[in-house]
Image 1 (cartoon, rainbow, N blue to C red):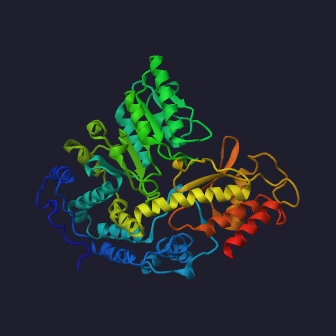
Image 2: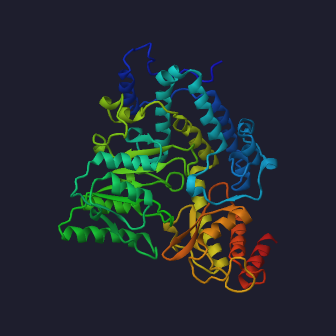
Image 3: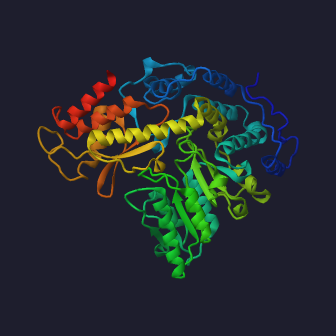
Length: 504
């Protein structure tokens, strides 16, 4: 029995049915715009997990260790030794293989793919290799379109407005190369920005570096209104000077400071001044609610493999309808003459499994509780940030929860300057930056990034559905220990007292 069933009423022609491959792209355009879309039949290997997810509605797993053990590979020693044992796990508790000592608080870095999605992703690759020609001519396009419909449903737009790209950097480069900047064009951005995006702006836009203007982001990060006002004041000032800004590039959630920016309001200000806006939403989908039509950005790109927990190499690029005719993919190939979707849907022979497994990813997140998880993670991160700041007698980088999502950024304690310490005496805040992150991993088995911002060291803690308070409490104590604080120090004693009280 074939594990792929024939699509129902959604079948595209095979090569044998129509020798003209271009007919595939014509049907892609009509199908993606259809108001009466009927998806192809679900593959058997996905149906297995769908049944598993349905059972979760009656008996939902608890956030934290139960979700971690059942649905993620993080810290799983068995999978590290025997990766193929993944196919025997079937969503069951796996405590024997769990590395209880490993604590992962760095989801923001590269995400973490759930076990169901890993299995379905691999299944799609096997299907491709079983009958390669039939796969590319018959199976691929209907299921890619299905994935676009699924993800469009959770980002608040029509599937015809989004295309798949491998990651946000692909999306950003696609827009920048398509806009064909002149040397006199002005591009604006905040001074707090992801370096890779800054490099893209410098090297792909063919404009002098002096035409790349940076807006000073208000710091401390007080509230959304202050940030929006800084954009308005900047654009107003430039207009008064006769300077016309062509494009504004902004992160939805900043790197590395994890501040959630008021993008909808920033978009409105930019459009008020006639400025197009490109939003880097690398960490948005799955971490904050998204409605791309309401946000109204001209261009928006987001990684599904981060907080949505899809397979790696899966992102979407949203293009506002009035701009679609001018945005071209990085690779020009068969679909180019046939429309926006056709030009993107085929970028040469490659594994499309991360896109094809996206419906399973979304189905899993919905089974756990999509909006409930987003809300829980935000509340958890805000409370965790306050707890860590109190334990270390420092500060959280934002005080307004409106600027936060599932990450908290906390100023780390200074290296202890007295008593017995293996780190030495150091009162400078930036001292021991690399050692601190290394020591947390090697001595305490905690993966969490430490970075420098505004001449201070900060710890960025990512908290997803598989994290719980035990992870946060472990970090609170470990940070004091690797920073050289002796057991009798006031901070350590106070923390131990608080932890003992919680466990009583």
